[in-house]
Amino acid sequence: MAPTTTRRSRAGGRAAPRSRRWTSRAVLRAIEPGSSVTCVECGEPVKFRAKVKAQQAICNVYVKGVWDRVEHYHAECYTTAGAPYGEAQPPAATTPRRGAAASAAARPAPAPAA
Ligand SMILES: [Zn+2]
Image (cartoon, rainbow, N blue to C red):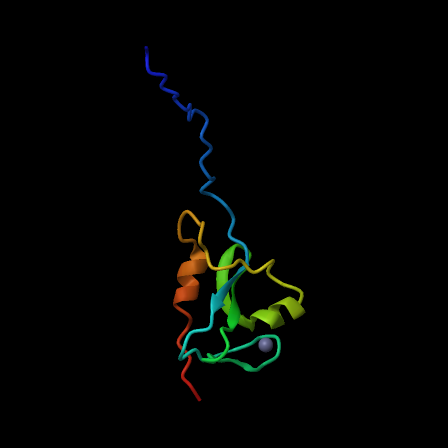
């Protein structure tokens, strides 16, 4: 008659180490209207096109563990370039919390449209 309460022991839950060293990374993002960045690989502007649901690879480049810059690639150019900053991560659906990549990518350096 006793209700079987299965308690999951959460003992030993490993917390992610905070002191991780930031390294360069790439994320895939949809190209947004008004985007005025240039692909590092081919030198062409990474432009929003209404017809195509194009994606860009946004790379947060870290130099010696310190954020240095953001580089933009066409998604296909990033692949062509050999994924210099590792495999571009698709839009985070399962990321527990926003990393530096997401926040930095959300605010690209303002570049005046020529
Ligand atoms: Zn390109």
